[in-house]
Image 1 (cartoon, rainbow, N blue to C red):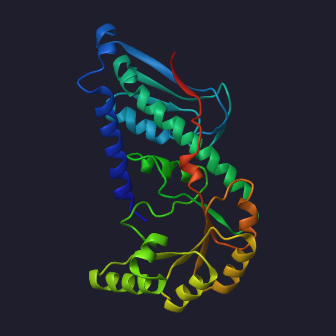
Image 2: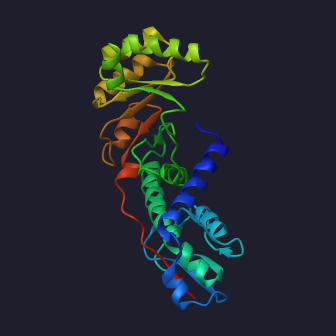
Image 3: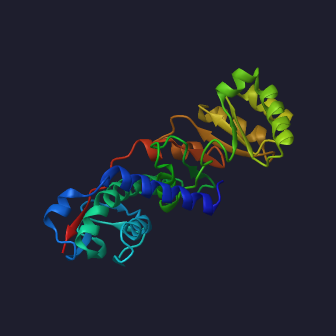
Amino acid sequence: MISKAQFDNEIALIIANAIREDVGDGDHSSLACIPADAQGKAKLLVKDEGIIAGVAFAKQVFAYVDPHMKVETLIEDGAKVKHGDIVFYVEGASQSILKAERLVLNAMQRMSAIATKTKQFVDLLEGTKTKILDTRKTTPGIRALEKWAVKIGGGENHRFALYDMIMLKDNHIDFAGGVSKAIALTKDYLKRTDRDLKIIVEARNLEEIEAILEEGGVYRILIDNFNYEDTRKAVKLIGTQCLTESSGGINENTLRKYAECGVNFISSGALTHSVYNMDLSLKAV
């Protein structure tokens, strides 16, 4: 996984780029009718229900736009919220509040939706040993926010990007000439380049799992698009030789049944690519 410093840098880049995109050479709507010395106060109002996420990010946005703005937090990230709840108050220059408003809302609405869906999946897994993982099926440019939201909702992060973990999927295997060759070439690459990266390998059938285990040196096997019966067989075959992960079209209706097959992890792109934003507003007080 990426380091905290790398993650913090990603967040800083997201904020800088989003403000550049939204403000350009100035928020002329505010500049036109709000005096530069005008002070104001606004509240983050919930108009929905679910898990709130993005409070800490909002504070970073306000600080970036204007370090003199003050935020009074009433509800922290990860808390359950309902219609009418006030998450925080922000106070400072009215122009600054308006400049930060859209980025704060866009981010928090999406992050809260992801955290809410993740929490639903986590609750469905209660009592099993299985943990829910996100994927790289994220919105380009804001992956750090979406993976942050998964953590807030109680899920776990998969690899962050292509550079922090090796993941040999079907196309890698086919292009390399088979699963055994792909693993062997990967281990040689890591040795030659002196890299310490974990290896995950996708298996399409039980025969590929046997080949993966024979090669060894794999951190986790991705049991992809298996039915329940074959998943149980795969888990038994793998035993304690490495960790196991199920994926492939798993949803709320099938999640627990796959967990009951004994896998360590279930990964779901739906956590980040199939959510409806939570309804939030930033209103002047």
